[in-house]
Amino acid sequence: MLDQAMKQQLQSYLTNLKSDVRLRLSLDDSDTGRKLQALAEEIASLNGHISVVDDPGHSERKPLMLVESVERGTAIGFAGLPMGHEFTSLVLALLHSGGHPIRLEADTIDQIAALETPLEVEIFISLSCQNCPEVVQAFNMMAAINPRVSVTMIDGAAFQQEVTSRDILAVPSVFINGALFGQGRMSLAEILGKLDSGAAEKQAAKLNQRAPFDVLVVGGGPAGASAAIYAARKGIRTGVVAERFGGQVQDTMAIENFISVKATTGPKLVASLEEHVKEYGVEVITEQRAANLIGAEETDDGYIHVELASGAVLRARSVITSTGARWREMKVPGEQAYRNKGVAYCPHCDGPLFKGKRTAVIGGGNSGIEAAIDLAGIVEHVTVLEFADTLRADQVLIDRANAIANIDIITLAETTRVLGDGDRVTGLEYRDRRSGELHQLAQAGIFVQIGLVPNSEWLNRSKVALSERGEIIVDAHGATSLAGVFAAGDVTTVPYKQIIIAMGEGAKASLGAFDHLIRHPAPTGQTQAA
Image (cartoon, rainbow, N blue to C red; front, side, top):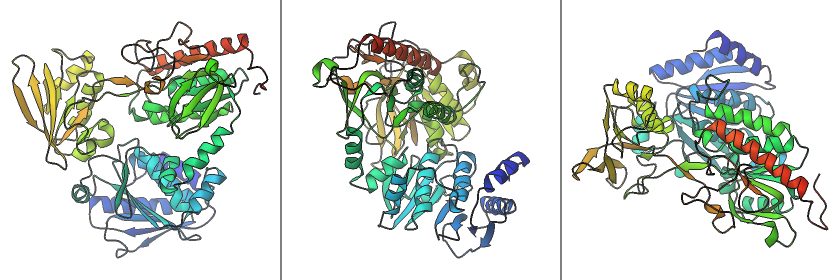
């Protein structure tokens, strides 16, 4: 199962085990079951703290491997083969079950340990989903801390019948005690916020006590990370507040045009960015959504105020907003009703759930054609619908798509309706823009890839000027129309929404903010933050 390099690396990690770990197997005679047994035996051979127990009657769901802490009695389950993106989840489960310290703040560990209600957590994933490991690892840490929490990762491709019976059309899908808890990316803080009703209020109270920042970056994508690093290097108090660090890059599977790096993935790049940011002592605040911005001239204390959806208020001498953009929606009847029920926006995440079925991709740009090529190896057939008369993707992608037998491309096609049976998508309706005729296509899934919308709605009540498209208008220094407020990245009017451009714009906005600070002293009567 594991090549020699992976074995050596895993063996090195397992030297951190401090107590015994038991791998309890409940297998069937499937190919996945045989591979899971081979994986368990290989892992056990690498460290004397690990043993394997064959217990076929333990669970009706097979194949299943439980990673059990012999000392604490906790258990973390993997139904299916935890390879691909989930191999890291398995390694961490082994380490945490074997007594290796969990890298969480003491308050968070205490909050998890204090959960009194038994929680049976089932997480349906696909091994190609880059968002799933964060959710799996968050719940796994909870299970390693609190024995009242039991967790099972379930590979949807290996348990298709269960996926169908539960109408799961998006991953990750989390069920707790049999009821749907949530779908899509969730951080540990967000999970605890839903499970612990008082968590949000406590966090807001703590944030209100924060000293003012010299530079507060709103948004944690490439532009925000770059801005924070450049600010912190000036020796000034710098903070980042974001719903999640990394932004939309977390959902990008392949990055091949980042200069000096031939190829990487979004999650890998984000991890490197976060590590770099934290090296400079930047205070990173996540799971917080900006709701309003009030300029310094309108506040009592002379600081710019950033109001958060949680009710907290952060203060700063300057603000750099880099809130990025999100996938554009079709805004046609049925889209919202069947979101996560066949309407999807991440082919890498949800594509495996449509194995052997017919799917459509809306949009003929690079992202749409890349999605079609990716899906073609999984699904029965892909139909690409493009509104214009020609595709907007790079020619090399168009040529590749045209060479794949199970991809059809329809141009001058206006999607007008998502069709469904009340539970899931059954097809779509489109208008032929040549003839005006309406056509229907039977489809199990619809992947929307039609561009981006700037995340600037939170500024609608502020005095920051926006373009007709909702982008923040910035000058050559990254400055907005409001004194002390700067902006960078995909949320601005700067053309060409690319990671490397966003990083450069973040650095520029940060230098602009620093120039503003040295020309404008801290508010009178206020102590300047160190």
